[in-house]
Amino acid sequence: MKIDWDRIKRWDYIVDSVASEYHLKFKIDIKDIQQSLYEWFVEHPNKLNTWEAIGEKDAKNLIYRSLRNQALDYCQKWKAKSGGYETSDLFFYQADMIEALLPSVLRGEINTGHKLDLGGSARASAPSEGGNMMAMMIEIDAGFWKLNKEDRHLLFLRYEDALDFTTIASDLGLPSEDTARMRNKRAIRKLINKIGGFRPYRDEDLPEEPQPPVE
Image (cartoon, rainbow, N blue to C red; front, side, top):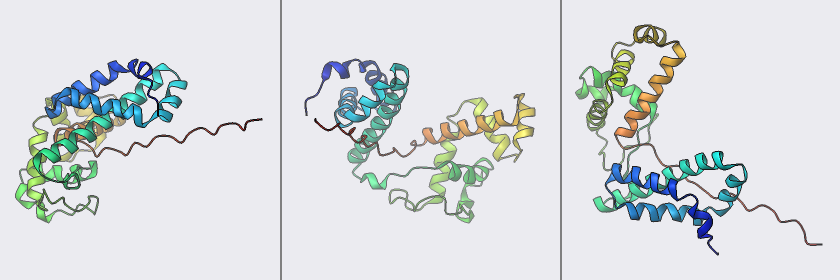
């Protein structure tokens, strides 16, 4: 397959931005991350065709999202390889797991984690975690204190004081219950990113467009 590097070059600014972001997060050589991002363009020609056809702005947003996922996948694999374990050992937190554990974490009841019922929301513990609920709670606590003061305050009101979103909105001077709910969702996402991030999705290329019959 012939690679149109001039066409790919127009997206260099996104490659550079994403590579810089994940270089700072994982301390991996920025050129190695860039190389992985260029591989995405080679492996997804049909997706690039479709996205460029819908317009510059939308294509930029879609490419940025896919390149961030590509960078995360590459960096996690690099981290696993350098640490001497398999990528299947990587553990990814889910929002409902964080919300189930936060009340005990914020109350300092980390040693009671084994009594919690997570409702089957999480997959089996990764070997690297050793099935240790306490270790997960300690990790969540460390991530919580890396959040900014506003996010910590909101999460404390929700998960330690057990306030509803209407009351939280009133206490924080937010315009509505929905605003408080959205702020909570964003704070949980930030917390997950502080302790490893979300599982990368599998980014397949689009099928080729059918060619019209030759007359």
